[in-house]
Length: 145
Image (cartoon, rainbow, N blue to C red; front, side, top):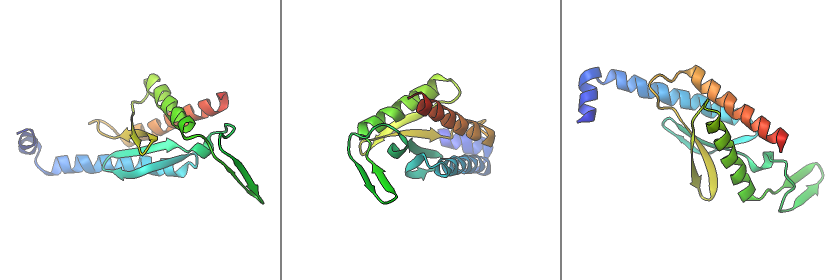
């Protein structure tokens, strides 16, 4: 009934364009995440939702695992729970700022932040601002650790 009412009121073209614009904005956010080597997209983008996190290798905590040095290669293992806690705190700080609102999920034991484009009035400028909030919050967290 709800779908029928939307299609009856707006036709097929308007909702189609609306959804396509949201997917396009999510793709833009995904590219921003992928362009910063401190982050990773954990699962493939689905429609207008991007699932990402700060990579454990970004965290400059003394590893609970081992430190392997061979030539120029240094591998530091960070406790997965520490990485999950960092991402949990990141999400809490971003949401507490009241500048953005994101949600989370856990995928195979990994705490993941979910960015979803879904509000009617969302524009590219909002997506870019949301990414800046993510970056600024991570920068603050990494420098005050």
